[in-house]
Image 1 (cartoon, one colour):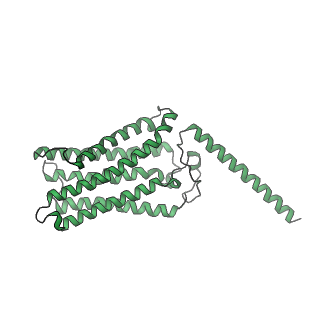
Image 2 (image 1 turned 135 degrees about the horizontal axis):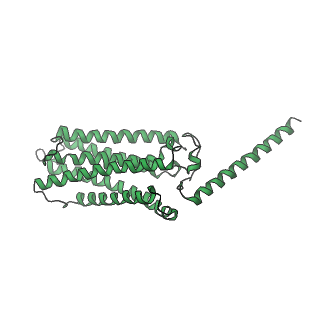
Image 3 (image 1 turned 90 degrees about the vertical axis):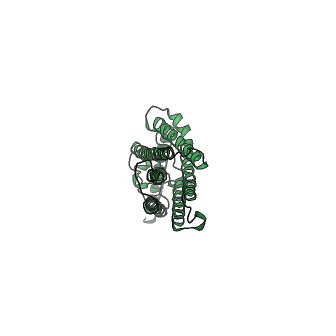
Length: 283
């Protein structure tokens, strides 16, 4: 992998920032709010920010870059697909629970549902995320979709995943701001009380985490190489740039095999020339 040290530093930074974000969300609801419960009160609503930060932000971010981890390149692509799908499924379950908590809290307090921009964008993200997860299972995980269809949908799948992740971060920032504006009255949010400063720091952590994930996911030289090369590459080895084809595409596999054969033949010819030159120099 090119720039393995830089990738490792970014990965550790992202994991650390994401984990601290989850801790900040828990501290917020336990120290400044009413904690967590499931009784229709404010403590039930608090499940929403905690599960969104944990599932929709942190776990989804890890699922996005799981293919980039170079020490998994010797693992089969099918195993990595199951891990990717499993992480996204866990995130989806947490999101559903968080949505139920919000609607139950609003209904118990006679608060209108789906009136704010945060709720509109958040619900849109949940709907598209569920469609992304369903199509991912049907097209890429189950062995029924034609290879041509997989090849055609792969760029759309990647782009929509990154778009949903960015939308989730935007919605989360709007949500925590909305919660502070409604909850802080004495002193008001504009007076910058300790809770406001603390939660603003949580928002900054979410932005930093999202930026790190999107950067790692958008670097072409950190993509998982085709299956044949992934089996022999070491994490610190030199993988060719631009090796980003789907391992299940027959044409790409054949191309990779021919490239490997060509490189092997070229290396053999260079070795023969070196041997001949060495023999001539010792005559």
